[in-house]
Image (cartoon, rainbow, N blue to C red; front, side, top):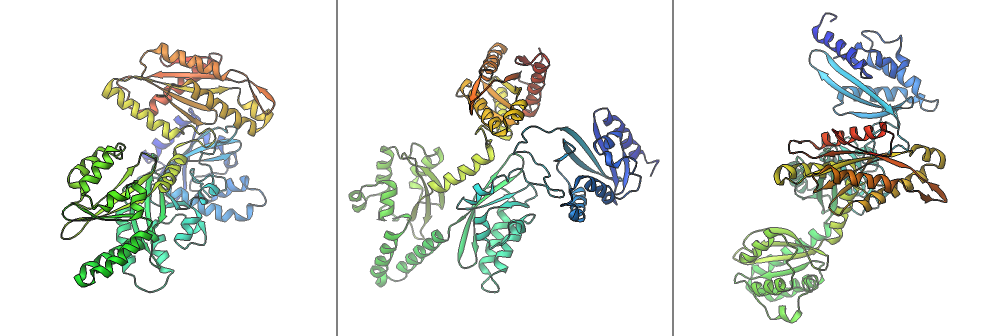
Length: 576
């Protein structure tokens, strides 16, 4: 294969990458070494004089781990090598690991007719290492960047499942394990939710499998996309409601809420309703049973007749909606009740779609479910089920705690744990929206990239605990300098960013940058230590032809490095 033009091109590419300090090594389809460049030996000197054309990749890994592992880990070398080979064959996304005091970023690309090319880029480790980085802390094991505090997620009452873009599970919390009868958290890693669901039913042994097949069909239909919530049955007449939230990097957070009691109440209510309609002679007896069930339910329930009269309304509905008991005892029309609630401002926070639906026949003519925020801050889920022959059954459920739990999950996914500022991913989303506003509305903005000067010596001298407090103080200084409409984020390490909205002139952005430099440069006291650092700020202005948030952030970063090169503690605008 020595005369292969593709391989010759790869060797030329490797020589070019040497000038960029990027390492390259190519392997054939059987995982044997084909070509490498000089930087490869610079990053991995243990391979110098040992790599040869045709060498198996597992031999390459054995040298790497022999050099890297200590005496306690060395007995596991074969397991680490096997995991490394598997990762080499299946890698589709970049990841990071630490080696010889460097953070090494590695990417891999399959090439038809050749095999696979791997490239490495290295940089100095930040101090302290940030919790959002995806590093190999144990050879052969790639840790998910989202799983940093199992204690926090294990205390959430609902099950939590985190999946990658391939729909494979990266991590689950303890309530999830209990819900799906798992004894080992690691046993779920790499499986699909389909596998977990099948396993939960298989563990229960043979029995009525009709609910399983129905649930499996629902699961497979909804898991293809992170969309609307769905419900699946579990063994022993249990139920789980699955709610998904997809991150910008393809990771999906799934909350699994146990709704067994809710489904049982629904089932009892449906049974009572069917029994009441079976025979006219049994109507009174069944009505008594129905009313007793309704009065003891945690859900509010109302029945509206075909003529629009609210014939039944239990005490829980009166409590949730704060309806006068005398009003509902008079058997009012639904239109009258809605007018009463509307006059009191009950629908002011509801969406325009919900308000329009209620104006049209009260929303009784079709099955619908929606969340309605109440003026007192609670959120009520309203579900309407049309009744054959006319009318409808409407239920009201207080879902405030469930919504708060979902909000907490979103907050964890979008915010930096130390400073409570937006993280890099969430900031890029806000920046992309601002880019669209420039093209659509002509509303300009500026991006300020802030890097601290003299921060590393603080960690070295006083320790990381003081360094963390200093970062939190810097975050508060940035938040105070920003306007209400601006967006402040921690990008990682000692790097921050600020999106200044509604500006189009460089002077305004420059003045804000100077205020940030001045605010961060003030001395502060932390744990009896008087500390003073500085900041360098790079600025990039929006333009109508800018399309990519990442590119704007890179330009602001470039301007920041120009500020560093100009003596630090100053502001530089990109392109000037």
